[in-house]
Image 1 (tube, rainbow, N blue to C red):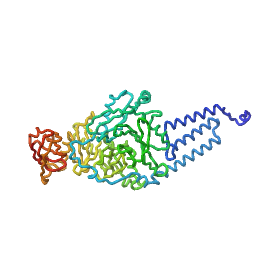
Image 2: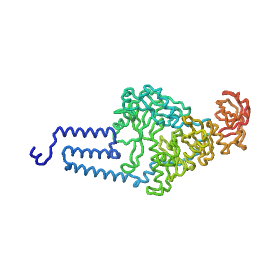
Image 3: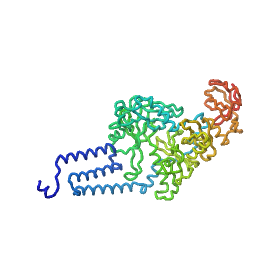
Image 4: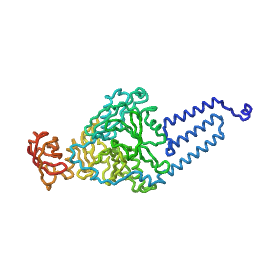
Length: 553
């Protein structure tokens, strides 16, 4: 044996060297898989990358063992690695939009919406629930001090809009503050989550009946992504986010992506994993089988990616002039060099609840040449994945923000990203204006199709009244809406009464027999004595807000 080694000039490694080197390679590959968590499936690009990494590692292993630069084993490994890279590239090409344009374009379930049917008129609202994301974060972060062992945790900035026990909330999970804090909190887990009431702004830390042991911020076996990978080794996952059922029990929702174009392309979510945040027990559901309490199956980034595919490939992939191409406002948020994004609070999307009580993401649509106007907008249902398109051109969102800020420019208030509401059939941007401390100081309404029609007021009721005046739907003295309307009369008890100041005049808003009435103090000064439970007779013109002409006790 020694003669052979001497004649070939090669040093044969000892058995121990071979065993140690093999173990090191196996440990290295295990650690890569443990940290990167690739899906062990041919439809996962991460899995192909991992295979290439394994082959490169084996090549280096051959060099270490044989102590030479070229060997037959290294040659074969190099050929296999090169072949896999070529196959991977070809499969990626044939999975791309170039060969699957229609598949990408139709991956999104798009419907044409009817604005007046899908967006109920909000003129009857005394207030409109709209707590912006930044305010929810600020209010929620204040709850950290009420959490046991608060220094171990952070409040995430997720704050998804949910419906919980009949009210709208923004929900955000807690996360571990780092590895060492996780080690301190490992036995006790995460104690709960934060809820912020959209209507009242009340924020609270909710302690769950059982601690949350599985979380994306966890480590080792308690890391949610690793836990899911062990349970479903071949699945390609979308983002995970927290939801709570009607009892307040926390769960993680994780979409499962499956390719619809070639091997890798046009991945769509057709099912999701529901994971008990406390026990880690998981169950897969089809989207059509989701439990009713789940508001979010689809993530924002996933839905906006489908929207990008649809509007980008409307006229094919090879479309250098971008004819007919539209982009979402959310898309522009990521263009760092884009002058179109002029407002620091331009998030590109907002959340709203539709007429059926389902949560949707809203974002505008702009022509690809980035003019300062929208061609329309879409709503994306977070539970069903249905996207509705509304062909309503007008001012894009940052322009509306600038208009609202300009009205109060002497005060330096900053406008939040708007949502669209229906006011007497008029698509209208609704937003808050905040001071430098982040406190909401004003409410603004800007007409989508004519942004010169814009008002700012102390609250929603006063802003709405001024807006209707600008639309020509109310006279400036606010005593009637339409001279041709029929004068009606009702007698009943006052269920609610609210007093506001508008343009130097006192107005009273009454709820009687489930109808909302608005009356100027000029009608009868004795209104100041009225209270809840009083029986009154009201003469009024019927409108969304019924305008009182006479009132008597």
